[in-house]
Image 1: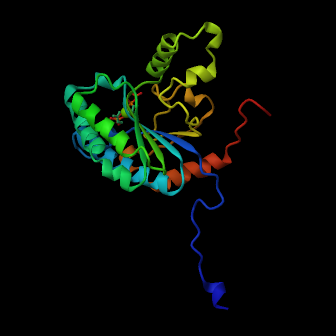
Image 2: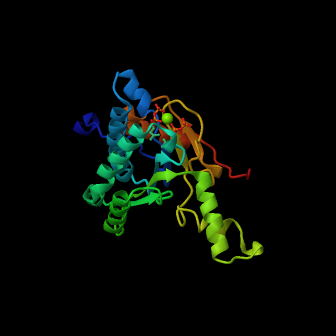
Image 3: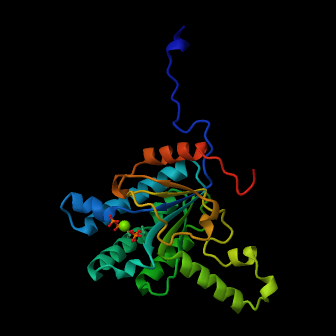
Amino acid sequence: MKWLQRKEKVSPLDGLTIPAHIGIIMDGNGRWARKRGLPRKAGHSAGAKTFMDICKYCNRIGVQYLTVYAFSTENWKRPQKEVDALMDLFKRYLGDASQYKDENVKTRIIGDRTPLDGEINALIDNLEAESKDCTGLTLNIAVNYGGRDEIVHAARALVRQGLSPEQIDEQSLERCLYTAGQPDPDIILRPSGEKRLSNFMIWQAAYSEFIFMDVLWPDFTPAHIDEAIREYNHRNRRFGGV
Ligand code: IPE
Ligand code: IPE
Ligand code: MG
């Protein structure tokens, strides 16, 4: 009767639907640092480590798309010292293409790259080229990203393509978004206790399930992803139907 005693390892996600696309507003780094008497940049470094762990975990459990909000079009308002620290972190995390390639993660940067410096732009080009054939998770890192800015960018592209007003519809506009060809996020997750979008994926979020959590981003763990997926599985998505 040995088999009766054998404990099968059950994954916390067994039997649950894994969302195809998760969006995360990585918020709370500053508060995490303040609680510890550390400079804000220490919170950003800790948050960057969390980002890498969560990215690997999402890839492992079969999430197809992960979009993380790293820097908004509004974040330039922060003190120059903090902006510089964030740009240095981007250099570190965008510069090591092998980190993503070894995990089979296809990485793309979404947002307006024009104000980013030449070094960051070159690292992004390299990273996107190096990981383009990866077949695991597609990771969108939103840097200098704003949802409103993305829609303006798309509107300009439609004009440049010479479309007539009648040719402009949801599909043609979507083809000009940074996320063209990708499914909309099923879940938008925001840690830190704030309950707002802060200009994240405002077009794509039309039917996303919002999950707000009280944890600060550097304290966020794979167990929080599991919790979000369990919550998602309890939601009844109707998309306007019955
Ligand atoms: C999110 O953490 C990271 C970025 C916006 C770049 P914050 O820096 O916003 O952390 P809080 O909200 O001040 O705690
Ligand atoms: C949103 O967080 C941007 C990122 C997480 C990158 P913020 O901290 O900038 O948002 P607000 O200012 O609280 O709305
Ligand atoms: Mg914040």
